[in-house]
Length: 120
Length: 114
Image (cartoon, rainbow over all chains, first blue to last red; front, side):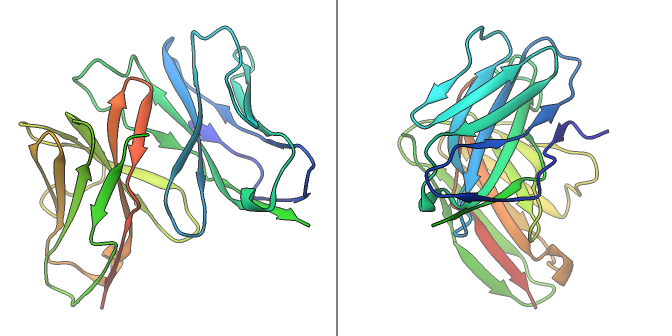
């Protein structure tokens, strides 16, 4: 079973509209972290936002907010007032475990991504 | 924010040769770095975790003798693709842990094996 599921392979949105990118996850860990990254055509991975499993409030970073619904295991990214420069691939990712255990691997598991295109 | 660099950004090599990719954390120390591989129009797949001063931890299905990882210092991890073949052509991205909740990614290295 996939650990991170992004059901929208591609999305077209009008400039200035809000966008919601879906992400559901699967883990049996109590402690985990959820990330969203943006990957423009240049290939670099740009960190957008982070939500810890124990965080009670939804994370926000500027125009980005994360709609965290723990019971549904959902961590949707919301981009308000979309801009042309938001066109890119968007990846949802998860870190399982405490993260700072220092012992085991805690690399990220990525979803397949959503290709977002903002239209003028 | 923290900066991670990769070198080279792009490399083309002949089949059978070895290629070394460097990942450096420029303004912070990283005891743990990660190597990912991304195929065209695909997601990132974790290959291995690189720990400073110890052996790397490889994900299932990743050949440790094929992809040699060395984390010799707190700011440098290297990935060497040995005896490269065309199927090794891919986009390789490293990241460095900047704390429990943060990973900083390098700009990636595009490897093409002819």
